[in-house]
Image (cartoon, rainbow over all chains, first blue to last red; front, side, top):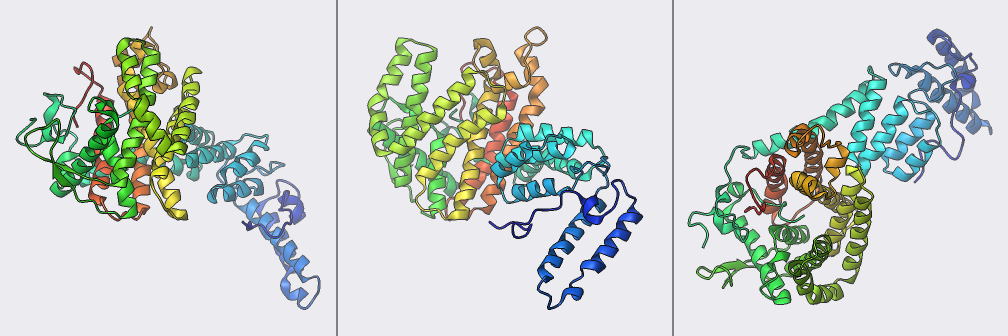
Length: 203
Length: 297
């Protein structure tokens, strides 16, 4: 299965380096750097140039680096040297694997990452979820959410897990299920067959 | 592990009930042919559900025929003859045999030995008809026994192991499935197996504590005999057990909606969307006042 990341080229590991700015640069600095680089590598400048594909790759990297840095809000971790900040390419790669149900691959990649921040724990939980390991998933998603309380993604995931039971129950109620209905044949404890519950009783 | 997959009878249509009963009676007759009239231990409505699912997935419509019943002498009972019934009967015999062997090991007595040996010959025949299935079940049960012996506190791992048994059972029973159908069925079967395992654990909470038997909930939620009685423990973890059970039901329900079921839709929907809820509510309540815990539907 071909990944969206391109044909075998390494992805951006250091967004600051790619944009040529200092780590922890301000948003204004990031945007300025981005605009300059986009102008530099713009395809219009490389039309009919045999090196056009290389320019396209560079442009892709620039865009990726810009996205990584601009999506950094809400996780509580700053950009300075922390390339596992939310939305980092390492985690994005893992997210892709999870989305495509390549759970073994996702897990292997996760295990190679030493820093166990909120996103790491969250993604580990998501892998568990897809495996049907819901107890583990819930613990981890809850932990990620308490590590990063402002993060909507983790909160939403936890909410959905907690809502599963009530949703199932409500659907049953809508279909006519009555929680308080008395089961009629407790008296005879007949394990043989359905007849007990019909008028006419057990024979 | 048997007896938890039930229907919500008041919500079943009469025609569906007849087919459901027809599967049950058909399996009863098949088991009777294999084991003699004595081994009704291998019988339950879980098997009827299995047969209904197999036929439902292949779109086979089965018409129950009225026949004489050895137990209920007066009125005739609806009986279905089909490959799904034969398969379900074999599954039940294999599972009953392993169950009986377990009982004989846990509580050696003339009674448990007799029950196990009565199933020996029928089991061998069923195994010769379904060799891969029997082998997979044996391997998975062994894996499960190991987890339980190691006192695994993981609800996930233990239930997953049993879930894979259900995957084997369902997938071996269904002839041709294409890619996406197979994915859905496997997921459905896995979750059903997990649910059965945990429903059984929830049901047996007090009993397992008393007898010192393995119970995933007891370990996971840290039962403390110094601080609580089994009953109090049940109250404490009731919501946790409910959450664990119902998320499985929700996933099953979701899988079912994606599956293209040709026949027995009413039966299968009733059981998955309401019967399992009924069963969940039953096991959460516990067996207040019920001695040996045998329940009717």
